[in-house]
Image 1 (tube, one colour):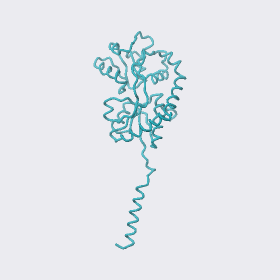
Image 2 (tube, one colour; image 1 turned 135 degrees about the vertical axis):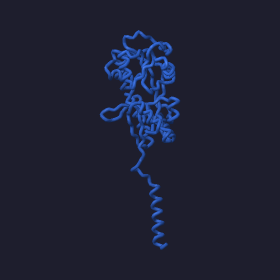
Image 3 (cartoon, one colour; image 1 turned 90 degrees about the horizontal axis):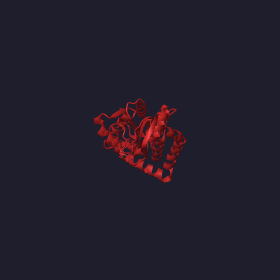
Image 4 (cartoon, helix red, strand yellow; image 1 turned 90 degrees about the vertical axis):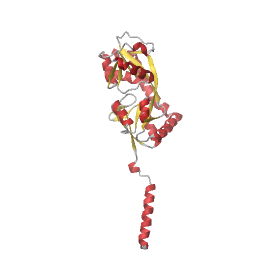
Length: 269
């Protein structure tokens, strides 16, 4: 081989090796995480996705120096996308054995209170024992988890025909008002907000104290091999708690809730 051709070949190989070591920022990975519209945790306002869980997720990914895309879709679809690799993960999610088989779960991001609701004129009382509700119709949302205590009760009662399933929290509230069932279960803060949004606060009351307090997580696709991404997320979440950012975001939404809470809970509780 002529000397000039050897030199050109060597230079070409060196250039290729150099290019391989340079990060290609033009094709940086964008991770897609999904959940449902579930104010105040995740909702769309003027074309922008906002909410408590949205801000926590965004801040973690900012610290990870990763691009994030958030989509709000029906809950059944969100679960399917996360469990079968059509999205990189799901947020605002409870841990169940079935979900744990398909996704890697983060450390707990926050907690929520599950509470029962009845129509305003209901004579039903509740002392915390779910077995007292066996003779009543209970309304739940399809594919929702309400924590082990409520989930196990629902599972045992499905065969009795005492469980009415809705496709969304709003539909569940509407069915309660229309007397399709006797008792509804839902996250306290989002349920009261949805009741207010639907304009039916004067028709529903809270039944007793919350039945459970549940951890809420971010789940990462096993199909896409995101164990490492989950681990990095946990590190970012831990740093947010350590430097006060987690408290700042939580307290911001708590203050917004407190501004509405008094007149809402007076009507609902």
